[in-house]
Length: 159
Image (cartoon, rainbow, N blue to C red; front, side, top):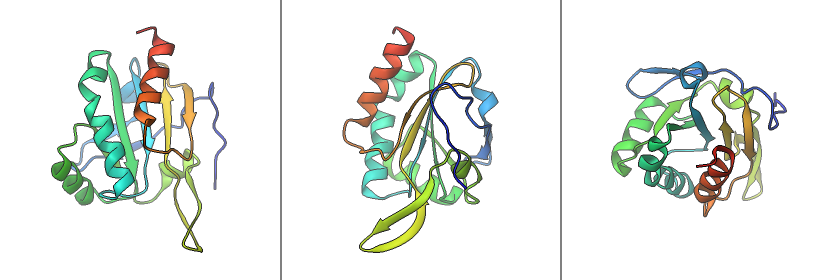
């Protein structure tokens, strides 16, 4: 089940936990900009590069009250190891049932080595202070992606 989301539409609500069991929901970020990104798997090359890149700009984003949340179908335990191994500063949430992943329309048919399977399409959603999606990046290529997001954020916020 894929949902069609576009800039200008309300972000689907979510409520997921981090590896410490702390719950996060979309409403927790009202009044703040949110970079919500979906990625396939902890500790893989592309996903690690993306998480590290977001962690590298974390302090600067914090100055502007921008939060970064990564969501994957990995377990909380996997997230804990991933965060510790790479000293990640961002928050990672576990969606083992794919409910939020599906609500954002990023659980899709993928192909690798001639095999088809369902998986997370690397995607990022920039959500404004009112919970409205302002920009969507689908089928993300990691190199330069965080720079592209921060440039768009600066354009939209005038910072």
